[in-house]
Amino acid sequence: MFFTDELMTSILALIGTVTCLYYFTKYSWELLIGIRVYILAKFWRTNLTLYGEWAVVTGATAGIGKAYAHELARRGLNVVLISRSLEKLRATADEIEQQHGKKTKIVQADFNQGAEIYGPIEAALKDLNIGILVNNVGKTYQVLPCYFLDVPDVEKMTKIVLPQLLKRKKGIIINISSEAGAHPHPLITMYSATKSVLPLLVSTNLTHDQETNLFVKRADDYAQEALNTVGLTEKTNGCLSHALQHFFFERLFPRWLRLTEFSINNMKKLSERRKPLVEKWRWKQKTA
Image (cartoon, rainbow, N blue to C red; front, side, top):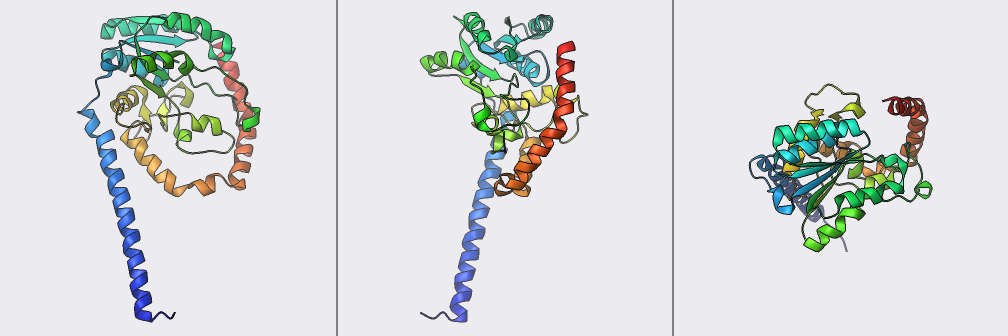
């Protein structure tokens, strides 16, 4: 079968038209979803108290976790605060009760200690009408990137709270992660695969209180915007600024490039370079 130049031109034009139509439809739909999730949600919020009376927040005495605890109380929920510092827990609980007039319950737990902490946590949460769990503690299976087979078995907060949510057939679990949760990354697959809230840079002690700007959010502002997206999407960057950064990151650093041997080797090199910083961080945590 022979194709004339005119026929080939028509076929190529059709392919081009279909391709343009596909991307126009795809990005138009993403734009509409983004407007609903990140802009209209400021004025059209989900009533979080419908899920239950209590919210549970891990890592609740600093950074994003503390911001979530305050924002949840501001929206009408009592809050269970879980963290390792009893002094900071009491201070945060007093702040919430005085500023928002809601009940608090504190649970001292160091998630670095292993599975033995979950029994007391489960006992403390018993009989509470929990509607929201915020997994924010920032626990990873290793301090530095490693292969999947090197991952130890760990317990999860979700295992404690989820049965109650399933029984009542309502509830929200918010897993605080980072942009790494948006797609697979070499040597941190489990971390990437178990997250639903995906911030980029937020000014907290973990980011050395980086100065805020168009790209870096204050923790309080981030928590407020991120909670606006609850009930609208299962995975979110939390705010419009971070969603736009994610959009461009995905297109400038595509999946095929992230998972190449080149990227894996760079992750290994980065891991080696960061070892002194990790040791310094560990020392600060012990002396804090």
